[in-house]
Length: 437
Image 1 (cartoon, rainbow, N blue to C red):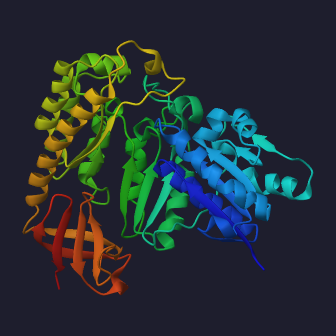
Image 2 (image 1 turned 120 degrees about the vertical axis):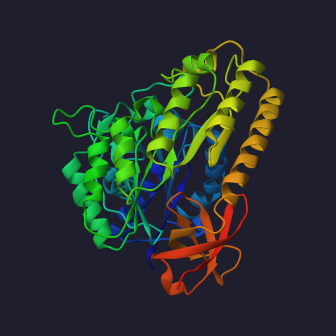
């Protein structure tokens, strides 16, 4: 009977990418991948620590795994940011954990598993060396059309609410030639969308002495042969330079969905967050992007209820949302993260106030998203077909360059291909259309 392994993923796109690599490692070790933990001989949790509830989710899953381990002798591993943050403490709290791997150490999984299986040791705990780049591991992605690629690791910004610099380390960029070679392979394999990943992608190359930077990387990628689309996440508004905007404008291979995390629309709150820009700076940047890239579809992240945020300061956030008119926004209530500066700030805000502000922000953003979506009616859009619709297997779904979801009738053989769609109807989050013959 074949051995089976499961990878359970929490958190960001970087974790999704790393989970794909872990699955590839398991397959190379002779394991079949399964989503059913009850039949698994090896289970790895790839964890997140950004949100307040992350620990609760992970503890709950470990509790679910405990009787399975007792019954099957399953090897249990934990990796990702929560594992990196907690390390030895996590292994002591949950004796069922055999392996704790830092973000950079997943290449050592085969050796760690072998040590557990052979009885050489009861536990393997490996932490990062943040001065080094993680080993580049080949991966096959579950999506037939999209490959993700970390171009850098770590963050130097130290936003006061964020734990990431403490668990991912300082910024380290992958050499450009190496990235271009990897992208060539993905394009040759048939991937039609390349997602560039990093905690702050537009600080890519800052440590290089040869002039390589994010704008140059984007430009060089677009020179590669093949019909594919480039996306990237996440940038920082402070580092969103003119050369990056100009490269996006001249290259149709770069997606028009441009993510620019706002976090707050008030200058004082932004200073308390250590974001490095003002309300006016952000609005000016958004206006510049829209002027140079007229078909840009701006998306953002916003936190409400940051410590000390007054009603008047929150209204500044609503003002920026009205002026910039984001296509989509990811909106959150502030949550305290132990180990961050903001967690100990005075003026922590009651949940009832945060919930009220979040609902008001969502109402405003949803109305703007609806208006922007309705403007697509009658448009001809190039769409990458992702697969059958979740709700109707007879209908295909895909996404535009701006990231809008489109539903349309078509043959399943089109999955993974670009098609031209005439938009015939629009809802807030979904477009409907028909293939242009």
